Image 1 (cartoon, one colour):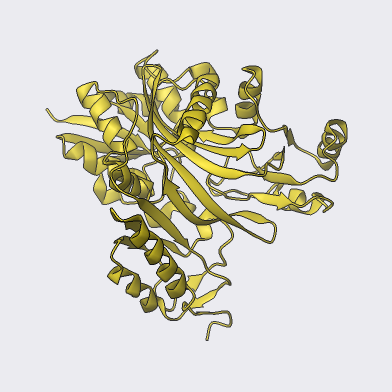
Image 2 (cartoon, rainbow, N blue to C red):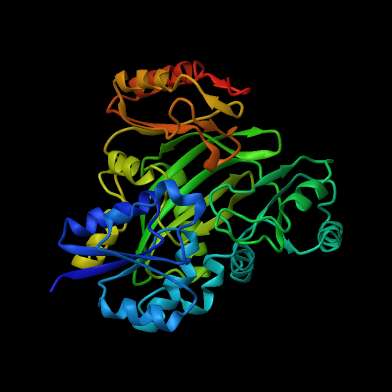
Length: 414
């Protein structure tokens, strides 16, 4: 009889779990946590990659029976939206083998997440979840943050969906009103908004894979990001730190504390941290793999990835505590300065001639509507560069920006 792995919401790069397990003789089964695929992820939904697909219609007992029938080697979340359902399924079918069930909300909702970190005594950013303008105004006044720079964002979304920066002295009420009651990328209504003091510094990502409470570092990445108006989530590039870099020790230790505080025992985490002049401060921790092109990039940079570790954990009982750097690797994100119609997508093909070129991701052919880049989900695309020569990598990055500048997006659609 074939063995199976259950992948919950395996959209976009999470679908690579399917290929990795199938290469080891394990058939992947998809479970979507909604009655239909999420609209925001339709471009990344690949049903043909799976042995079978099941939809959660709200009947947890029925879904549990279906999943139990596969006797899966593992139940794995593909994104944030899957985290709580995966926690519930593991606790129902294999109690005690997953993450701490009582802290499930802290691994999904940014408000209980911050509360769990605060309870553990871990340095964190002052944060509050407000359901009304009056609640928000009272909290800002009580904390002395009135008139200071702030970040507003949904509690249960992902990526940089809905993240707004309010500059010092600006009115926070307009973005608050825009977010409150809106529907986020997971088709959830934002019925309260997270308000957080703005943290100035350098942003890093720490990707990990844990086995039975032991946390192993998979990669530590430094982000370069831009601010466009009141949107702060415009990605420019990401680079992989060497394990000997002193920052890796600082960020790794902080991540271990945060992961413990929110009850992570097994599986992937993707933790975003701002390194401020006061030390590391949590932006958020997600109990799932790093998305986008991160798994491909990490394999090039380190020779390993979170997906690879998950397969070896569940099939070989393997645990890896750290990582090495195989060669310099960079993801350069591409931006659209305005919305409109793509008219010369072919200019991006010049990137394929670069010495360090590995892969180009752009889903906008000529004639398609392109959104103005304001966050991770409205990026024009990305190019993955990797080479043993750092100088070549830097030169190729400059060339990427020159090519990117030639992109024409007609704002009038002509």
